[in-house]
Amino acid sequence: MTTVALIEPAPVAAHRPGDVDNRATYVSFGLAYVLGHGAAALSGGTDPLVGLPGWLPMTLLGAGLATGTACATVAALRAQRGVGAAELLSGRLLGLSWVVAFAALFLAITGLTATMDAPDLSATLWPTGSGLVVGLMYLAEGAARRNVLHYALGTWLALVSTTALFFGTPGLFWILALAGGTGYAVATALEHRRVTRG
Image (spheres, rainbow, N blue to C red):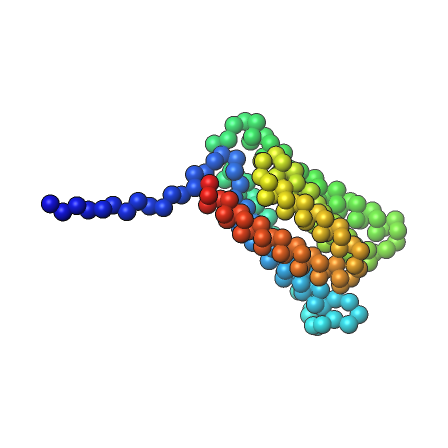
């Protein structure tokens, strides 16, 4: 009599309602930081290292951020499947908080540059302010979803973005590209481990 050994498939992490898989979001935002802010660092200042068209850094950053935002939205919608009414409301309020936070940032930067008559200030405030807002939103999401990794990445981004203000242009872009990009790379690796362990 012949026996056949069945190979058991590797265990797949069970999806827990409300749990968000941030890997694609972290990769997209990380690339946006490295490529977008990196291009601004390379081509900025009085003596740029590389001559790049002025539109390229913002295009690279915008493309990465748009992709990351789409990935985050899809991940959040997937996480809402099977959750209770309280968790669903919490997720929706967190999503709306992103819109409110960036609207407030827009008003703050527009108001400051207008009242101080310093239009060039927006080139410093947008990248650092955006990093601060993203970091603070990650803090809130990490706390609400009990995701320590997301909370830690938010802490890192908030502190890196505000520290970058001390370095002017193009130094702040170097800090955002290197420290911010590294933060996202580490978070991506740790998120993969967290999700696959279940």
